[in-house]
Image (tube, rainbow, N blue to C red; front, side):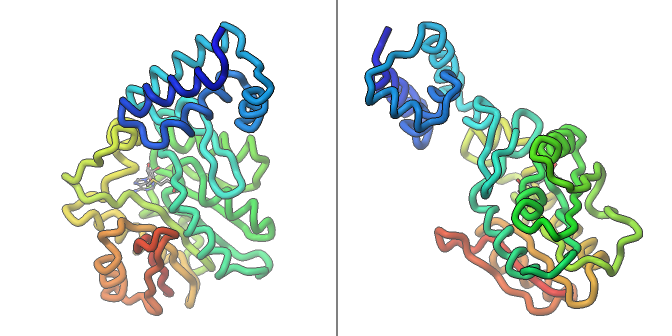
Length: 283
Ligand SMILES: C[S@@+](CC[C@H](N)C(=O)[O-])C[C@H]1O[C@@H](n2cnc3c(N)ncnc32)[C@H](O)[C@@H]1O
């Protein structure tokens, strides 16, 4: 048996050597997962000098080993935090990112307390954006679409587990929600937008996020985002709002392309780190 502190220190060193960012935090989260307790309980047990059982230590060692090979933390714990939700994620679905939470703020600012606002999330992945909007604005009618059947299954599972009434279709965003043209108040999307050929450096992204979730289909990464925006234009009511995430290198090019395609009130928005990451535009 080894003390919690010694276990965490040695795990953090292994993770750090493997190039894992936030190694100490990952070690704590993995021990909490192996011990099947919240992370705060790990700290409490550390203070009390409690030791994990041998089985927990072994499970923790295996998790640290996998994380050292850069398997995403969220695939190991099976969960990703997003806004106030904990989403289930794993192989086959994009892990939601903290910067995407900005899109939810932009949608909520538009919807406010408007009763029965009609909101659609195109390219929903795990369902993160759609489910967060529904949980924070229960009066809104929220629907979503996802192309990839595996990711779609994760989104449906998340909606069921969270008990959130969000319709989630499986299919291409470019032709989604036929029959609802001209009726939506807000269309939100975090589409794939990485320029083709620009392979992400982080192994967690490069080797574990599905390719369909990453690449925008052209050298500038904007082909799929602009196709999604065209469908949004058809679906929105006059004056309706598009909210779309983009790469920080696309803070000029995407707004300019939307303005060329007839959108009005085009504005770009920075994330908490001050990087341009989202555009809003009105039909
Ligand atoms: C960057 S991920 C974003 C997922 C989720 N919205 C989020 O923010 O975590 C993009 C998602 O779009 C899906 N996707 C790619 N092309 C699509 C298309 N043409 N129609 C619908 N979904 C698409 C991918 O499978 C992936 O789940």
